[in-house]
Image (tube, rainbow, N blue to C red):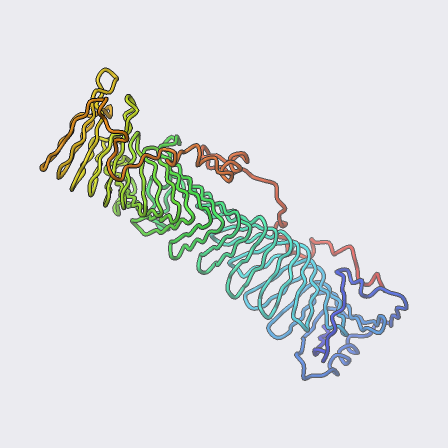
Length: 547
């Protein structure tokens, strides 16, 4: 078998080059006769040996001159080695004056752990660039990146895909209109209709950086995440996945999102919106949670799930609505079981308001506790105020104090305790009409309700003072200091669901009733090609046709 050695020319001038070798075409072509392999070997080894050398091998070789340019054709088991780079194909053309190769059929570029396959590769030795066309696949054994075209930068081990591209590794599948894969960093930078699919979630964005080693993704522009955890918990991978989480579906929207699996942390910013539905064992919705804020941060440990909402927070649940400047929501899972209901606690700061049924409460900070999936206790700390609408009289009963504690049973308000320095205003009805109003104060006030939310008893403890007013003597306005009643800013589920991003998703066929995701037509890279050269046809174009 002839072996040909060559060195790199001392100068390189890039000229336009078409895939099919049109650079060989033109007027005034002058072709020489075929040279023997031995003669070509002599020509090659006589070049400047101070430059980087290439080892070239093939079953057969022929040579010609076109417009003064030397061209070699190599056929059968073509092998080229330059430094640490190896190229293989069934056939190749070598353009000596430009120091370029055109590899045809079952082409392979090997650089370190990287292997790039393609139907055709134009390789620029001087700049160490490989232009790959047709059934392109880049792999390092752990990841496969496929497209119809690519540019491989050998020195950097960087591959640029300007056509639809797919990346698949052991944990995720990515698609996009174009992208770049950085092999040393094991990082993918994808752009244009990006999707990422892993066992627990589906992500869409305008662009995405995916760090495989760090299990970190950074998505930008029109971000949508559909999180639907494993239907069957994997106790080896994550023993803390509870039954509640398995039956929870979450949608997240934002301008950008960062997810770091190693740190178990996620960050959604830019008019962030979370819509979460928990279903029962039959798949029927049981609880719904909606949170909208400028930023949503999620953190996770073996027993704790924490959601932090920042700036212009709006929350809606089946039994509670709230607004605040910031929110911290903790969900604690029992460490010894995945079946026990979690303990849930929410803390709201900076001008917080909360609404339940016909009551609005507010203060310096609010804290809610959920036990056994039902609202259990609400704490208001600092400048606490509760206002409740009497639906018969259409008057607002009021209670204020240093702090407030509201107790619930089966999601229904049963009592409110205000202390210290408590004050109250109550309106009393008789036969559906206003009969009197009362204003009272004391060290502490406890108001109790029955199962129908009707006032059962008011207890004023120590330092009691009070005044009764007949209807015609009731002051106007009749309000405690700090009173406000703002039902117009109460978050409503129907208003939150009018978010255009949610509406577009619904119109496209997305639903919480099924875990199936609608499929939309998209350009996709081809399936991995069969690498057996005997079963693959060569390109229709042949550079020799131009001679």
